[in-house]
Image 1 (tube, rainbow over the protein chains, first blue to last red):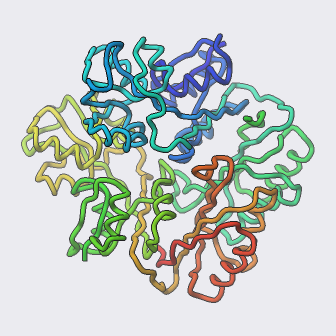
Image 2: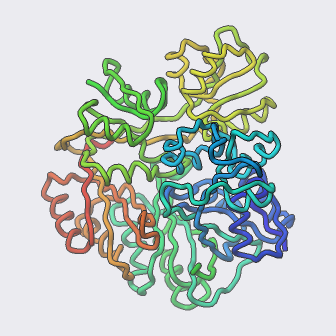
Image 3: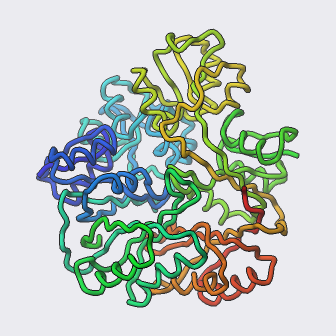
Length: 270
Length: 270
């Protein structure tokens, strides 16, 4: 089974794919999210693993746009606790370090830790990529910030675990496939829709779930790319499009929306 | 009048502050969003100008967290069209360029443009900072991507305007102050609230606006930092907390919410 992910080998996305699908999978690193979606659509991979929201940084709108552009189905979700590790060459000690390199977001999420040590920073494209670069340079005065898996992939040393300032750092990933699944409960369905711009339109749309006691696990409005003052709504609800209650809610919703897209029903992450 | 913003001189935030408050203001560059909020709270600045959402990248949750931690009030909003410029030293021409430097998000937003020219890329902490660095290095084979204002601030040359792949790139900024304002219509109010985790809770919360024909311009749920499976809701509605209709809606809402915070009522951006 081959799973496409975005980033260098050792990326958090690869760790999520392995946690979700198991250690025996083959992973396919992709340069961009576009390439990830294309790899699944073109059968170069069986599944894709794409981050959709982070508890600190919010939704990854680019992947919502790609869901809309492609015909892939969400078939699963996985929540990964993001644990940043300080990683150095095998003989490096904490005292040797003068410089820390990583993706700007990872550096920002470890700001207090880096500041307390008085280290310099340098930005790099990718967390796992920073370990790869460090491995290639062999520098002893430099450490990278990335996943524990990145240290393993590049045979480097974890100098310290959990160097993030805020431990409540979770990323939710979606497993994507060319065909849908019919999940057994507890499950979730992810949809996107647009509404006429009228007061109460969203209220009416949400009523189709409230009247059926269907819980919403996500609601987000976003200026519509292309027409910034119209909104697209992203909703996740705790039912399936393959059961009567969920089917009726979606039917009812389609009477109210101007566009409606169902991205898939899938088992809910624990 | 002194306005605090995050970033180097020439940042998009500084451009937004000048568009919003006028060219005669004094601007105060801050290293971080934390420092921006602290500058206003401690009276080092009269106002702060903080980005809250971008039409391509979504909400800037860090600034929602800072709104919650501080007692500042939203007193205005400003929507800035993000127009990326390719900037070089005064004598540089497009043909000299081999390398483009900027913040990773700006490089990503100009991906097609950079790719079409076959230039290399290097990431830097900040868009305006990339122009500052280029100015210091004097390199002729390098260009930076930043705002037109950054070119002006560092006396550099705009080689090409609007090099972004997607022109629908808007950032919404909030003007922050120590005290509230009482805006005249059309206005907006920004609030955050939490709910008991029960089906239909959000529907009930939104009913207080729908029943009064108050339009919602933003609705977003987000896993609560600290307790990732509870949600905080961000809502902007088209009325004021200082008029009867808005006041009653908020009163009614407080019967339903477990926590409710009003960040401020302010004139709506055109």
